[in-house]
Image (tube, rainbow, N blue to C red):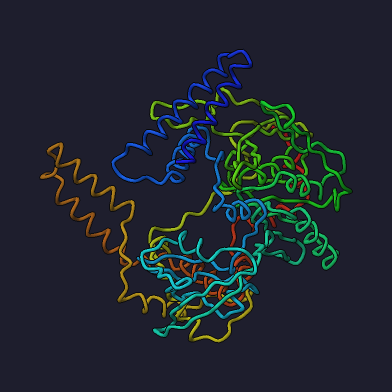
Length: 549
């Protein structure tokens, strides 16, 4: 009850405060609604038929309120602090392992190299039965992950099962810092490659060090690929530092503009660059957002890099973390950002909604043209458009099913038991022998799936019945369905290439961790191959950066 009184008292205090300021319209509305909310909260607590949890009820109300603004303005209770640290710093207190759920069972999916779970001998495929004596049956991955996280230096006791045998491990949690550059190396004899997963602390320094190392080890390096695909962003300062690797000191990279003038900033490159001449290619996709778009967009505006892939996400909003009482925090959208040409790439207008309450995309009619340093035309309002578009490769429904039902994962568990070692990531391939063994292993497994064609055929049948054409079309529809079944039976052969690639990545991860997965995928990566082609062709590279649109 004390918390209810505190909320009411807060509302009353704010009411008095706004009254003292003259009760302007906004002040009155705020104080009035705070008082109304406090009364609703108090009445629910006092009168609702069942007991309610005040903290849970308040968090539900706060989350609902903030969700009406945008997806990035969030409230974090004290118990969520490890999640905040992970988002901002790439750090959390834990054991260093990914987990996944199959049915009501929780399994280790991937222990990170050299961290407590790996050092304790945990392996992908181990089932987690208990955490600190509490059963994991029916628990979600977030429940179990939350139980495994905690203060660095504290202990967590796990009961696990492997190949039908149970065993226990007591692990000491440590401060887990995920590598924001999981891999860097040469993709050909003269083109370097740096993969950046997140813009967490020291991302700029780590990318710079990776670039310097590649140059030192490969004096004839003709170009470098910065891979930002799937990178959802992070700290703006790190984005500026990465741009600074290739752009001279004193260049304006990003400017923020919002309601509070004191939060508006202009961020310039602060250091001497590493190389202002070497050709650069940046890979982006629809999941490259925020800081990824600052890097790719700024290098595009400076005509300093060729951008390849597909259009980026379009997040031009900036958030600040605001500390609050009782160790809680808020992440609040405080401004929009603008890259060197002056454009803002925010694609969704959260201040306007359609009739269903969904935020609307910025219409083409409101998009404005801007110019890069060399005079090329670029646009605001819909993410970063690549200079060279590379059509994405979509995997089949069969492959999706094999991943979602953990059949590739579980087959690799078997493979690892039967193979002590494999070739290096740059050399290993899934042979016909391995693939045929996988197909044989699948025979008694359920990997049923429905293709888009099957769904369309079913819809056609339903529509034909509704419009009284079914009797005339039924024989033709039956023939189509029969032919589809025959074709579908060959899907394991038809999609052998993409399924083999998925098997390869999972196998490499078991022997060489994340580095192996990334390195092994490069050989057959269409975007990487295209980037190498452009970086090795100085004429094409220069034309892309100077050609007027």
